[in-house]
Image 1 (cartoon, rainbow, N blue to C red):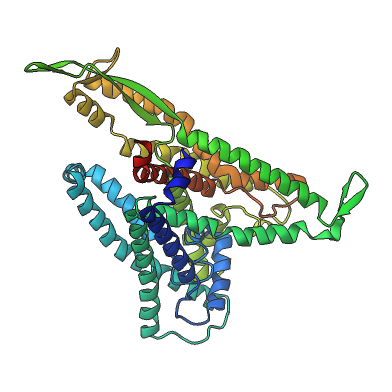
Image 2 (image 1 turned 60 degrees about the vertical axis):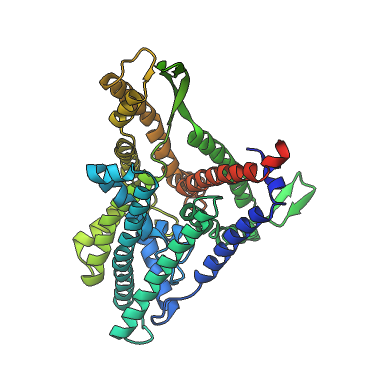
Length: 472
């Protein structure tokens, strides 16, 4: 990455204009995240959302990708999750239906059609998701005997759902506008901006804990005292060092790849000879990215969501209570409620299931996006072969074995990354007796690292284009 070239490119008006457009769209997005849904008192629904976040890991993830729009009950409360879901569904269907797979390989025209279908599918998904969340929130406020400002009419329901769907579609449009600027993927950029938007509240919580001197002050070699809590000072310092180490390994894991050398046979066409060259086929260690974590989170959140619905409509139901107890992600918010007598064996159930599902979904999703038979056929058609391996079926088998070996380490690494919040919470339970909410979000860090590296590559490429004349 040539940062000197990137800084030089800022003198170019077109490059500067593109960057300013991206920042402008992100600023507008953050303003939209504070516009409340026109349905009753926002504070009432925010309290209901807080209760849901304590019982659903998926709600926490949704709040993460919506930049806090979920907790503030804003028109961006569902964020771009409908578009993400639509993209995953279209990807799966494209691989399952040969005709759609052929269309996806039909150059720019095919990709535009599939992108258009993804946008169209995102609309009904946004409507369904908006209706479901607003209805659950409203029922939660009624079940908790919380007084709402008024009983919503049909027109109020339609207006609120329309506002939420419109917010999601505007966010999807912003993502496409950012992508058109050519300095990063728009949807990914919005996600990373959403995650970063949570930092001020996190830092505020850390600051209040750090400067709480009720338990004493930090003594520096007995010379003077710093007005900070000594326990939290060392915990936060260790936490900061751990984040730097995790980011380092995330970069290494994200960039790690197995390079396979591909030879091309010589071809004679008239008086000219073609081929006889070598190329490389890079196989990423974690080809599936963060998708397996999303799948695992959604899969484990479904039983908890069902249990919560049962408890909302039938309080005291044992089956609903059991689902909530078994499939609620342990956190600082619910630790005192779920484990009044301290940590038990049940605490490890959710993290263990989470780890297993992340590993399984890594294998599953990689098998979908990495078709070894297709790659082997393309190499054979182009006259390419791997040294010591026959073209065709043997090449497909060789690639399959190689990707499976990579998946073994990659899936375990991705599982450990997803487990970081539970690992850090467990360490705090051992050290101070309870989790303090100061956990490393492995998923958030993985998204930040992946998107930041990809955006830097695109910025660097465009910077090379606009400064090309200087290097002639």
